[in-house]
Length: 490
Image (cartoon, rainbow, N blue to C red; front, side, top):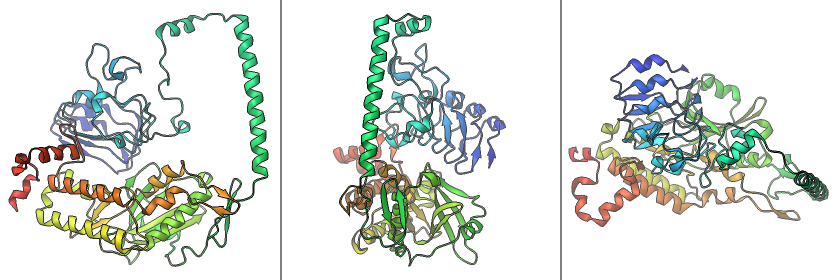
């Protein structure tokens, strides 16, 4: 908790600055840009705000990794105070042709700017990064999911290019011809009339529309606009229900955040006389909590409660209260961090080949159980090295902490359609357990990451898959150049 002191810029020999998941607030001090030897900066999952300072990386020529995702940062990804423009290479260069901001760091291999409030375009010098590194912002892109316009406010750049002559003309003013003014008035009146007619027609149609009923629900109803969803109060009868007070005490007033995202927080805690726990809390306001989301929540808890395997995180229970509004899922906690942290955060020396083989076999067993032994089967929303947690003896546990990110993003695109009283369940819920090929593909990438010790994306080699393909095209390269170097020591 607290802020980042500007005095940190005095540590001239500092190489790694890891302040992720610390509930830090305030702005990022520009003085961090005075650390000439810094290689890695991790400020992810905090509450940092303000504009991303250009000085942060202006002089950081050796910076290889930069993570500022899941904060409240503003400004441009460039980290520059240069005004937004439509100049060449979309703002990659300031006047004079010199690279600005992150583009100056020629050694940058890994970077994540997701889930902030950045505006503008993605610099071409960062085009090698995965699209997920920029999602959840207010950027001017079409193929990467961004925040709704309502969240972005008016801090973003203009959405259309403006010709300089047009700007000058607007600045000094020019009187419109009367006929043009009259045409605009008539057009406005006609558009308003058509809109009003459409609004009245829609209102009349929905007033006469019968309620939609989900047939397998039994009792307890929730009204969502003109749709009535009946929630089965027996759905979670076999799942332990915790009170908010119990969870709050276990998590020490929710002070220990281990994962933070736009739509959820994950807390660490210890039950009284019981195990350590990880608690996923949904970050959705009560007024935005629809009947569909309530159905998703209860269905997700019911599905997770079925899982019982040594290589999958076990759901211990849930918390569902209305005052204050609370929706939480309680899991057992694996205390040794994520596989990603051990592979890429300076702890790779702990992962001998024996341990790596144990982790790979454990993940494979977990996936086999979820996909072939569990009926109906189950898949992980986002299978990667961040979704694999390790116990003290390095037993892997598959977790699905990203499920709410997936559910909320998909629910915006889905709907319930019906003929009479027959309901079609939204695709995001039906397809939740059917992405077998996606999990198998992700497992293959995970194997490459574990064997090579390389992150999924690297600036000098591009994606891990492209890097590995070189060894298939030229088999001679496989002689000692593919695997993690420490493997030769075991």
